[in-house]
Amino acid sequence: MTLLALGINHKTAPVALRERVAFGPDILDNALDSLLSQPSVHSGVVLSTCNRTELYLSVDEQHDIQQQLIEWLCNYHHLDETEVLNSLYWHQNNAAVSHLMRVASGLDSLVLGEPQILGQVKKAYAESQRGHVINGELERMFQKTFSVAKRVRTETEIGSSAVSVAFAACTLARQIFESLKKVTVLLVGAGETIELVARHLREHQVKRLMITNRTRERAQRLAEEVNAEVIDFGSLPEHIASADIIISSTASPLPVIGKGMVESALKQRRHQPMLIVDIAVPRDVEPEVGKLDSAYLYTVDDLQAIIQHNMAQREAAAVEAETIVVQESGEFMAWLQAQNAVDVIRDYRHQAEDIREELMQRALSALSQGQDPQKVMQEMAHKLTNRLIHSPTKSLQQAAREGDAERLQILRDSLGLS
Image (tube, rainbow, N blue to C red; front, side, top):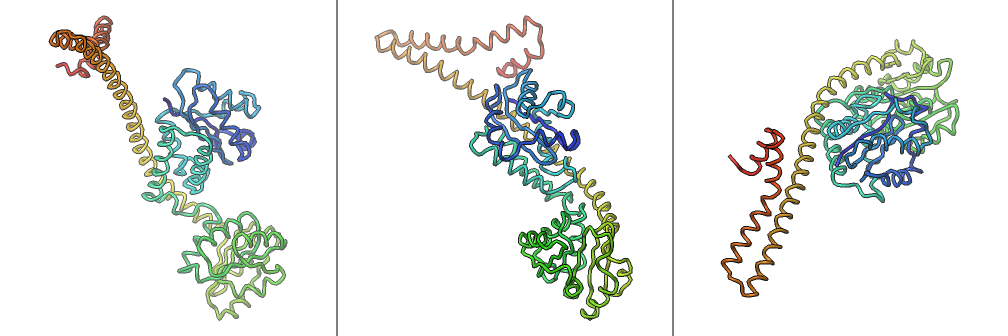
């Protein structure tokens, strides 16, 4: 049995091709049925995200299995082989195990160390398992991978530092305020970045979350998702004073938060500190706001400096994580090879027991017919010895004829010969 990984990702293929090779939830079950019906394929898991599509398989080892699987992938998606061949990568056994562990640990992600990929791998495993049997080797590989990814997260700093603008904004807020559970946050805008910020803040259980946007309907949809309240964009100046943190990201060509607006809010707050994070380009907040006492203004450039510093920390942590993957994948392959030995030992014992049972029944039959017991026992012992040493003897003779000293020594050691 051989473990394989076949796929494409953001490093090898543009998004236009990745979209055409993806397996959406509506076709996944059908695709798995088709994949598992291929000759030599015993079980499989399909991982398909916006950045990668990968097949993890347990197959019979044969010389043309790679070509078979490439043909299946292209036929299923109605693609010409030439369109995808240069974008595909192929890993076998230890390399396949290492690759899966690196993927699940965030070492192969577009954003190094991003945590979402582990959940995506777990979901892919669960969905591939539903209605399909995943054999022991592949199942063990995924279970081992989950524990390795957890170990990487626990023992290294690969996921602890902010490397996205949204995450960096929330991290900055957490550094300035002791606990976000006691603060009120105002989000200005409802685009993708603000959506990510809102989700991060929800996880940290902010005391109060307000959202405003020029298009109220969009703000309303996001507010319902993160349990926030919506305020009218036109009433923004009236609500700034109640916000301890303001995070703004709109598409406005001109600032939407001016110095006078913030100055008035600070007076109402009796100059309690206010954190303002402007992650818009062009800027949403007038630069002069940063000169006000008790107003701490950070722009997207400030966040980029934080992100670059944190990315360097992640890269250092990735070296530690790679060491863990090498160690753990080696241990898994050692276990897998030991399992193969267990199968061989079990088969050998069964064979010996079948021979013993056959000759014992013959001997009992001879005894029941009144034959001389001593003669019967001698004949059984003689036949048992001959049957048991027949195959090893042939192997020894063949190794000697071929002058294969290494094989001859292995056979001698396995038979306990000095």
